[in-house]
Structures are given as C-alpha cells and as structure tokens.
Image (cartoon, rainbow, N blue to C red; front, side, top):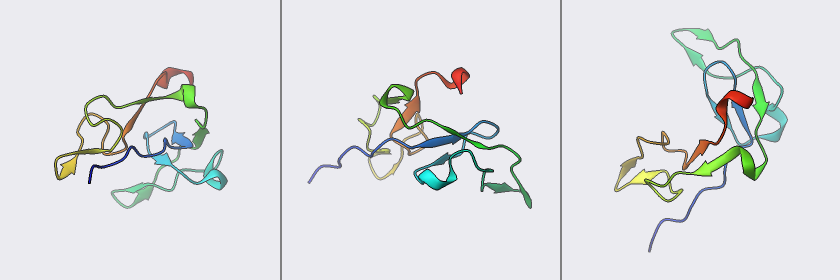
Amino acid sequence: MGDTAKPHPLGVCKACGAITYRKELVNQRCIRARRGSRCGGTFAVASRDACWKQCTSCSGTGKQGAVACTYCRGIGWNLAKPWSL
C-alpha cells in the first residue's frame, strides 16, 4: 500500500507562502495567522500545472516515511517559478 501523489495547490500567498486548494480563496486575503495577527498577503492564482513541480524527494506524497517532507513542507509540490506570482 504505497502513498499516492497529492494534487497540486490552486493558490499561494504572495507574502507568506501559504497554499490553498480552495478556488474561492484565490485573489482573496490570506487566512494564515501568526503570533496573533493575520497575514496581509493575498492568494495568487497558481492553478496551472506549469506553476508547480512535483517534489522529487517524496515523489509528490508530501511524506518521507512517517513525517512531512522537509523539501516541500509536506505539500508534495514546489513552485516552479515563485518570482512570477
């Protein structure tokens, strides 16, 4: 029973790098909160396959053994061109 690759996210916050799989949050304010305050960034659209590269360290599963992959933060994907958002 092997782990299967996750789908890639649909959006990423331009300020903090948080990701979302929810279409309705794209172009909306980020929902991540740290140290009691909400992030001021917005989720940029990153829904195209070309926006993402599957993580080679975990083969897109987001796991290395029983823990989250450190190379993709457990997402299974990395932004192909983060500067283009």
